[in-house]
Length: 355
Image 1: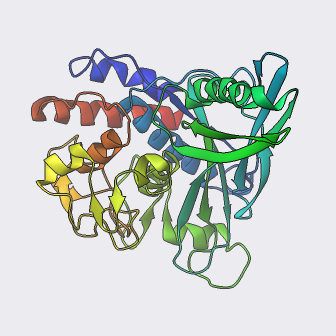
Image 2 (image 1 turned 120 degrees about the vertical axis):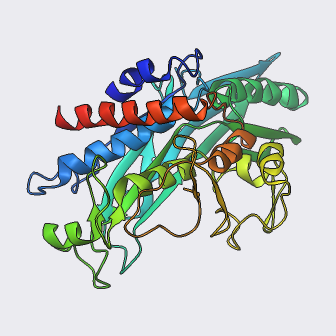
């Protein structure tokens, strides 16, 4: 990824912390941004990549690699076997029908990109991948719980990835009349993000490229056009959902209705009561915070409604929620440095979009 390294020079005064994990965008199932007939496709891809790179630069967690999706736990002559794959939403259809092996992922997560018709005025959605478990065993019943515990420990080390649990799988299985419980924890691994290719039309089928351009603002290096939805802003929002914001156990651990109990966001706001939207997985609409780059008071990225004709910027409140969820956020520079960083960031992103 070019942006992450290009931003290093701008960030050096603010932080000497190592970069965190990459967010790798995968267009294997896409026929929108990669469609050779789409005159805005490459511009849109650059906007998506810029949003992924911004989060990769801000989030400092490093994820352990996934070398295998199969573990075998033993106790005496008894063996527990666990095989893990992921089910992800096919972004070209919006249905959950892709089974993906996580083997080979390094310090990264993978996000599958696509587009399809979603009805009028629905713009984008995202979902983290869901781990699936195939479990088997053999041997003596009395040793089954210990063998299960051994396999559980290996899965949690392998798929926990040194991060807060995005998802948990719990259950029980029996061998020889003996039951053993398992409690598996999975950090961030993969997800899908998809956009509406017919945003102004409730009928199925893709609208023309020009009709799409009338609704979407594809170019993240220019001001957002009047009446348009900024692709870059929506990508930031949906990528954060894939990290668990409103979708994972690392979010649900702190939620009760519209109340939040995470310490960072609560300290920033002075309260956690009534700070969430009534859906329970967005920040309350109208709740404002300080932009981390320009120091200006603005609406959060993770509110429930996109802003028409405007570009969202991550705020200190957005980042505080991420911190509560277990993500390590790079130190935020002082306002004067922030302004310089914003200028250099825009310069870096512009260079990338022309390459």
